[in-house]
Length: 163
Image (cartoon, rainbow, N blue to C red; front, side, top):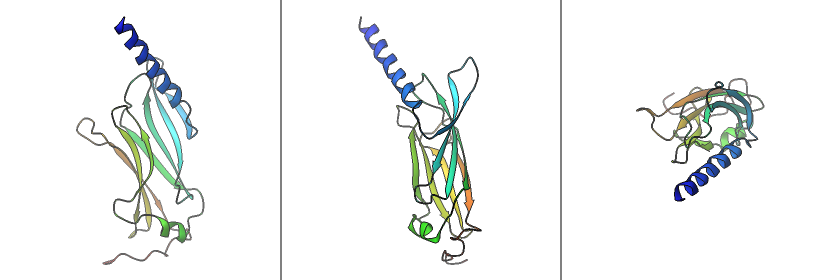
């Protein structure tokens, strides 16, 4: 009897997680990995909250009916609107940058994070997507850059010392 109750509770959790994952407004693509798998590639859109002229697309695998999604992901970011000096002035300019997106990938504390880091020397925004949990001896990550060349922000940055 206790086994059946646990099984029902586990099934309810999995069904709720599956239903919630299907309710993502930021999802712009869903690619099945085949008929005999419950894994799909989900493609999400992210507009940088502080630099809305940058749009990123993130692809990651979602493993329905499992407690943890794979850590692999990919990111591509492009300028899709105006980027001003005021926007760049408002962002974190430290070497670790600022987290602009986070999404749980597991019930066991694995998270997909995206950080924006400013490369003042090349006047580019870098967006790094990474998993917070080591997988097969590696922390999975992916990087995309958006040059400020041709924007109103280009040239407005103070050059770092030693440049």
